[in-house]
Length: 212
Ligand SMILES: [Zn+2]
Image (tube, rainbow, N blue to C red; front, side, top):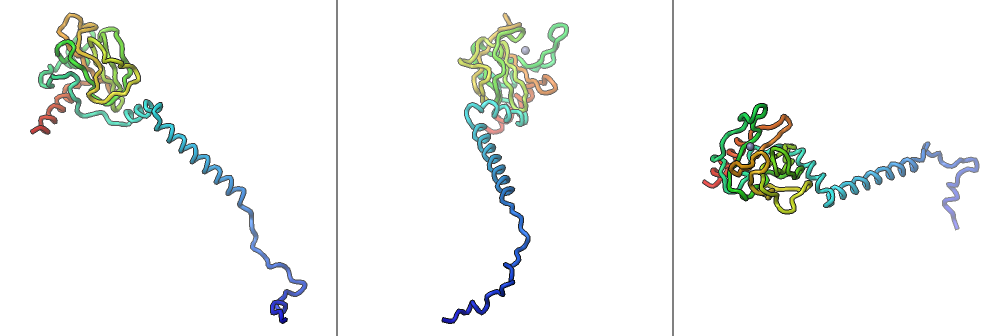
């Protein structure tokens, strides 16, 4: 039988065909892949943890920190229109204080509600404000609800609130004792207190426009 290959068999002194110089990249490739895998795993674990219920608070704080502060605010006291609220922001109070908020008069026991999304950072009975609630809202503005007659049931520091969530009821605690019951409402930005009344009025105006 004729073996055609035998005719092309290499001469005895031929060397194996010369291969291009070759480095073995496999160890580096494996290390890189391992690194990418670990990073992806950590990212997935972080993503998972961030979205678990126990991270709701840090998540809310991050969201509130990056959110811009509202340009209008709903009335924090049920049944009161902003037009009825006197502009007493900055009015002198005693010798060395000025009024850092507005007073919203309503019958004792009228519900007081959060004006914003926020994190409850203070629920206490102390000093001038008496029974008071502090809420950290969008843009890390602090909202101060004071002279409350009582707190909303189960309300505590660390709670997340939405606009309209109950915080307490109107009263005359703190240095308002004996005066007609009212909510003292103050808002503090990074530069300190500012007048919330224009924002309350803007909200009422928006709603009037919407219902027309
Ligand atoms: Zn006041």
